[in-house]
Image (tube, rainbow, N blue to C red):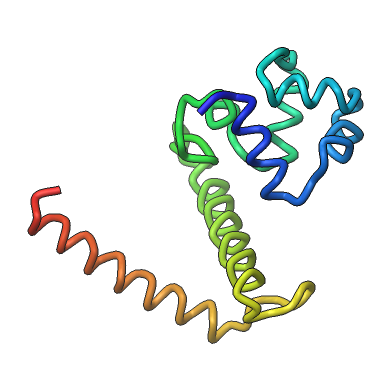
Length: 139
């Protein structure tokens, strides 16, 4: 997927118009349109800003990975706690987004602890079963 397609997809996923994004980036709406049609490409500062706005990696924007948050690894021991917190936050945000989409909770409501516990428990159990089946099938 091209940069422009990813940008458009992210913008729409976040219920933003080209005008909304242009204001956040301090560029014209036409410029955002040209980014989305791959007629223009943002400079490195705007690219970082776009990644920050949508909470994705630059590698994801450039199509180098399908992992929105890039490859997460630690070179230093002190980075491990940051990575754990970052992963937890990403996971929690994804759960919140899905619960809102499914009308299980309403905007502004936090995730009830019992729901979070069940998602972790059943999600882990389901993932393990899927991995076992894939291994059995040789995938």
